[in-house]
Image (cartoon, rainbow, N blue to C red; front, side, top):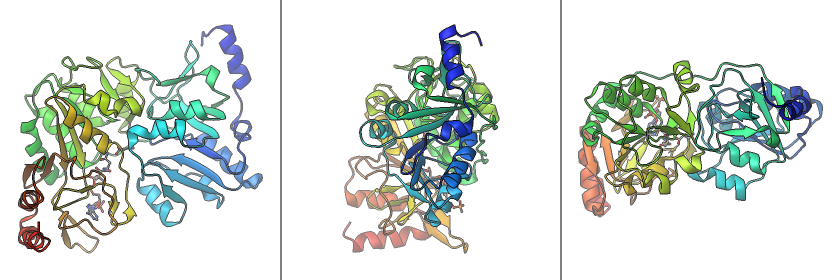
Length: 440
Ligand SMILES: CC(=O)SCCNC(=O)CCNC(=O)[C@H](O)C(C)(C)COP(=O)(O)OP(=O)(O)OC[C@H]1O[C@@H](n2cnc3c(N)ncnc32)[C@H](O)[C@@H]1OP(=O)(O)O
Ligand SMILES: CCCC(=O)O
């Protein structure tokens, strides 16, 4: 490291062991604790020990999409608060150890700046650069906002994190860090990318004709976006651009296939813009020192005032259930929180406001329950307790393996007819009868 003397001196003072760093944590604290593929695992071990040895109580860890069961959460005195449930959080919630924080993802930085208490921030970063900056690596999201408001900031260095080019707020300066811990350098968590199913490919085939050369893509989370990425990579489309909350393997495939130039993008021309990444090691290698990328905080990436300025914005997101008037549930099964709203509404609204933009909610027409019984995902009403992730008045295109419809401007009667027409054939008559009965 060839940083100047003052920076190196600061590094020397702030560089401590994990046990020394977590000694700042006291009972009742709120700790912002990484997010998704960024989890400070060395600090977790030290924090678990401190909670146990010092008999701390009422410790609240905040994060999302937990990728590993944390040692700190083994204590009855620590609880996980999640912006976005993954499988581990669903399991923790069943044990009474996790609660969901409903969010509109673009707003998380403002919640942190104006609404939430943050005593300590614990995140992983790359090693410090010559100017004294620690890069956030794979999650940018809301970290800068959390750091601004926290009493104590602890960074755990992970040499395996990619160093990513950013727009702004993609790194923290040593001046704003209280403790630096050299961690165990765990490999970055990988997300298995399942091969797309026949149904996913069929749904994607209805979206494909709606995408033109020069369009800007946002691909959401789940099986379908991945399928679409694969179809685009094999298509004749060209000069596409990317402005997507999540950077996933699908985008690497698109770059390798020569589909992404970003040359018609009105903002961040030529750049792939994103706020967090999750995928395979191939993705993380692609990200390292790649000048094609620009990482930004989520209040820029997901902001409708930004996305709406990018023409031909195509937003593609998944859903669990939709009712006959078009209300979309993408985050719960009845009242049970399955995942989170994430940036779905942000992108549905932004893409619709974009000149030539289009927004797609894509879902298989059915799912099978644990006993193998087939259920429609298009239902007269949402399952009681289901959360409306995207309200019906914001929904534009809805796509299943039976077709693609546009709901904008349609009456409730027309919506019911159109939605029944893209349901699984076995459920269409039942849906039409239910619509009549409900006076739709
Ligand atoms: C990341 C971005 O760029 S941003 C913005 C996007 N963010 C969002 O849209 C947030 C919310 N959306 C999501 O999290 C996802 O898109 C989802 C959950 C809606 C879909 O994800 P997928 O992985 O494609 O889910 P999938 O359709 O396979 O369903 C998941 C499970 O729920 C079950 N399921 C599906 N629908 C229902 C339903 N209505 N009721 C009960 N169970 C259901 C499925 O059978 C499946 O079960 P299995 O895992 O045992 O097979
Ligand atoms: C972590 C948030 C992911 C999403 O928007 O779905």
